[in-house]
Length: 294
Ligand SMILES: NC(=O)c1ccc[n+]([C@@H]2O[C@H](COP(=O)([O-])OP(=O)(O)OC[C@H]3O[C@@H](n4cnc5c(N)ncnc54)[C@H](OP(=O)(O)O)[C@@H]3O)[C@@H](O)[C@H]2O)c1
Image (cartoon, rainbow, N blue to C red; front, side):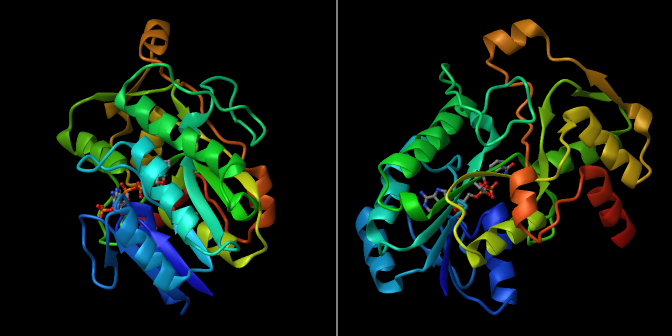
């Protein structure tokens, strides 16, 4: 099986690519600005170069781990141009696994199952443009895409863990630095998310590529979600850091209204967990594992 990882230089894509390599799979990967040995440096927006590359590669499975980066374009353009061109340039029976976001879901009433109707943002903030770009892709992939019958859309929450280079993700790094400063800091206790460990998500994507196609949307991650406050507390517990330094705060209703904050986008992940051997650990267990290994 010939597998192509799009965005294999990114945080998640690099883990997916490395895992497939370690499994002895026939794997190819693309990167944009951040070249890594073995990867094909190519601009996803360069439709002619991409079409030529895909024609010669003829992948059986494509795992899309790309998202807009600050230097590149908007998410909508990445999908409207890059994703659509990719889908039209690969053979008809190609499997596509597209990584999307919990951000498309309404901000109340989580954990949300796959049947919950997504809702677009009405503002023009950066996060709104990113999320709306993902939502546009989800809709196109399920309706107009020639690969609609062979596409799995994997929604995930906040992805954390170590990059393949060993560095912690930005969110965990910020919390560790805040503890190291010795000053008190706060994290929102009413901002609820499903936190997903990067290697577990990579494992799930590789497993999805190896089993019969699950068509449509699936939600990936552990059973229980966390608040940003409980995420910081899990870090403190695992490394015996001074827990009292982190305080809870509540995002006020006026911020929720004016800034379109989605308070609760936790995912109900029971369907996918019932299909896969990959285990998703809760944040507390996962950080405890890191601390024991350190
Ligand atoms: N991280 C999270 O918390 C989170 C949460 C929910 C969903 N997701 C989804 O999970 C997936 C992986 O996220 P991530 O955090 O791993 O992303 P990331 O680290 O920002 O990686 C993005 C990847 O996309 C590539 N890329 C972007 N624009 C490109 C272009 N024009 N041409 C070629 N390559 C391009 C980047 O290549 P270069 O860097 O080499 O330019 C990089 O490999 C994404 O689909 C994202 O939407 C992530």
